[in-house]
Length: 383
Length: 255
Image (cartoon, rainbow over all chains, first blue to last red; front, side):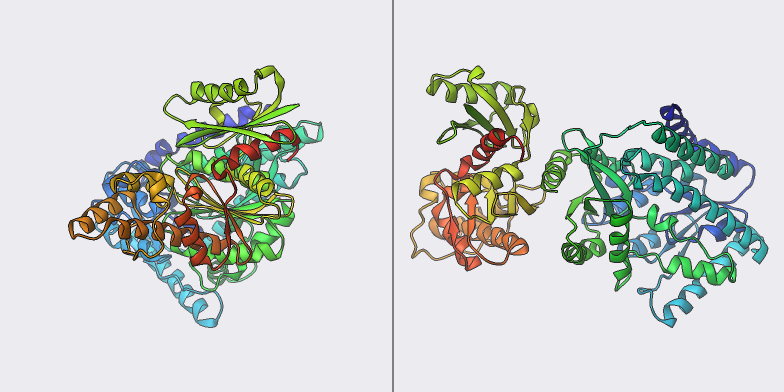
């Protein structure tokens, strides 16, 4: 049997080294570009010779500072993002040359106005629906506008060759992650959701992409071999849960902990929320024009900010089937209106498909772990 | 053969003893030492029947303190227990509204008392038992008088549902010379409206079984019924529904 714990530990250390690596990158004069959202076209930044970095946005700590400028009744992700920048406590923000944001929701676009006073911030205008020619035209314009901004800021040319190379690299990363995520399709999962979160983070914060791809592939292979030799890391009776909804980070590990605790008896087999399955399952088309292909991939992310957003419903049902989920838990951040409103249609759609569903509203505080445990516990007793 | 259920709530610890035919129940304030109070609550019940721990085959704990109970062999969430308890006490119950000390739950279930869906309020005491008892104290009512507001009383609308804001609103209404029973009815009506709204979100027809301590408040139950336009049934010992459900689950062991 391979020692899986060892690889996981190596990834944990790799993730923790992220800030040091970014500092080194910065000292070598390489552009560092801060991002917040799955909509940011990673390939453009890479093709501009820069490193895209996910900026801190998932801790409660800087929220009090953010509330000096932002209202209390705002989603914690927005407040946390802003608070980190304001207090200069996010190493990635500290080292980044510029930030790319999107007009995903009202809170974010207004927050970027203030963020722009601290760091060069470029905001992409995101269309509000996916269908129709106009959305495609608008979004392509925005992709081209971002391309010019990156070229001017970093004094470089983003050629089609560079773009194609970046697309290929990013697609390889997505494929690596999909092979890894797909382990949860096995009749008995091989990893906990919390471990899956860690591996996703590792790929994000280890800035040596080739090394990261190698290590994740190695982990996937070894987990499969261990499984074939009869190793069962997860209790076979655990109820399989698909997560959907708002992005989860460090502060929302409490959700995974509560679902996967021994008393609750659940196991997360997939994350449909930002940055996971939803992002990696649809690569950029390598055979068409790079700009068109990037435009199409990113516009089609089924996020609740789109109206209508029926593709998300189809995606959830598809993942329930593929990952053999027995229930769906919708994680909604307080004051995230789009996900909160959409919850009703997700409930109705899943009810019709006879898939157990529950929504849990939470924030970054750790004070509701008991309430969450009761809700998840009751849900799992029910299914 | 005896089984027992213990419901460790935020305000009271309730215990139920089941001999296969009938129940005996007990309740005492939770206080701040959950472990020893749980022990005392089960002992009281056992002594009344001249039993000791060895006579109980299975014990299930529920309620927010369920994991603090050392002597229970397993814990089950209060949602599953309330469904089982209500289904036992009111035959054919399909919807349960449980108002507890710190939360409100709506549960729908099938004919066997198995949960099919549920809804819980936010992490806030708004409209819960704690809100109710705070307001009773503020108006100088005993819980009994607070539950028997005369029918002909006029409702003074209360707009704040937050425990803290409602308190200042009540004080300012008293200062304006509004009758306290009108305010009391307004408070109950605001809870009723919120609770009825939660029930409506999950189930649209049939009678509703109300459990939890506040179900003893007859005025509240009738206001909820009025808002829902549906019958609200209150079992004999609504506050013990969770403990009773836990004891039944202990007897079945397989829910």
